[in-house]
Length: 277
Image (cartoon, rainbow, N blue to C red; front, side, top):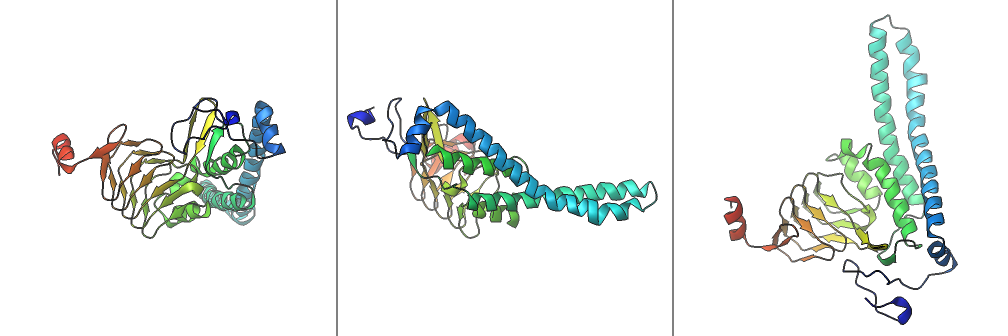
C-alpha cells in the first residue's frame, strides 16, 4: 500500500487498507490528535461520559418530577398493601417516561453537537474520528437501554430518523443492532430482519474506514445478516439470513446473495441447500 507522504493514492472507502497510509492533516487540531493520540482518546472518552451524564440527567428530570410530585403523595395516602402496588406502578410509569425522554435528549444533543461523520480512510487517531465517535456514543446510549423496547414502533423509526438515518416509506426495521445511523440509507418498502447488524465503519491495524451503507427499494435482508461499511444493495435484492456482506460489496438490483462471506447465488442453489423455493 502506498505511503501518503510519498504521494500514494488512498484506498477506496470500504476496500482494503494498509498499515502506513494516512491522509495529510487537515489542520492544527488534526495534527495534535495524531501526535497525542492516547491523550486525545482519553479526553474524548471523558467528554463523551460528560455528554452521557447530561443526557441521562435530562431524561431523569421529568420522571423524577412525575414520581415525587405527581404520583408519590397520592400513593402514600393509600392504605397498605395497596400503597405498595400504587408506588410500584408509579415507578414503572416513571421508568417509561425516563426512557422516552432519553430518546428525545439523545436526538437533541446529536443535533446540537458536532456529530456529522463523513466518509474517511486513515488513522484511527485523527480528527475525523471525533464526530464519528460522538455520534455513535450518543446513539449507543439509547441502543443499549431504550431502543430495544421501541423497535418496530413509530417511536423507534422517529428516533432513527432524528439521529440522521434516512429511511424510506413503509420500511420495516426489526433490529436495534445499528451503528453510524447518519451514514445509513434504507429505501422504500425494505424489510430489515431481526438482529440484522448494519454499520458504516470497519477498521484494523490502527486504521479506521468510514463508508456509507446504501440499501435500495424493496430490499429484504434476512435475520441476523451483517452489512458492513461501504456496501451498496440494489433495488429488489435479497440477502439471506446469517449472511455477511463484507466492506465494499456491491449487490446488484434483483440479485440474491448469501453465505459467509456472502456471494451471489441463484434460486436453484438456494433450493438445493434448503429444499425450499
